[in-house]
Image (tube, rainbow, N blue to C red; front, top):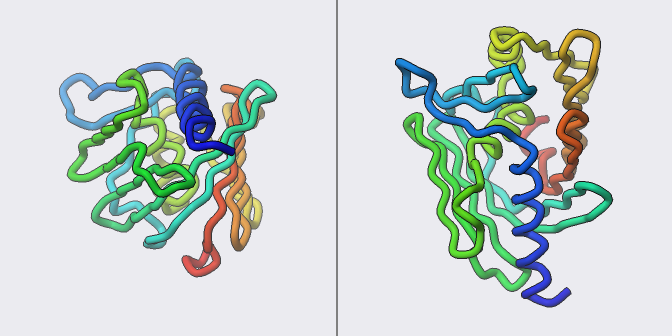
Length: 194
């Protein structure tokens, strides 16, 4: 795959994922950021202290939206002090950087449009890798529920599964049934005790 096709694919996957989501902003009277996991479920981003296990690793991301497949690489460093991600193409050129530190989300990129809502990247990350007790309470506060069955996490609205996350030694499969997208993260996750 050529560098330009890779860049276009990576841009498209992020655009498509975030076109399916509503805008996020600080809630009135607070600085805490939130996203909408459903049209009405306002999920407030948890602080970095909720991270279950620290990670500092390369990840390969493959995503699917509307029968199209997209690919991207990332370096992810996350612990109880914050989340930092660098997106890059197959030649190693940086395509964007995201950070979640001190209650603020920052995203900069020479290739991705400014309309991308990085809070949704942070929210999906939290659903995958945050402490399930803290996550369960945060989801309950917005009218959703967390169900865990072995290595599978399900986010429920009533009886309906809206998001399913399956963790394996080297992969994490994330499916958002409500918004119609899925992706797989490939990395050395077994070292962080999933």
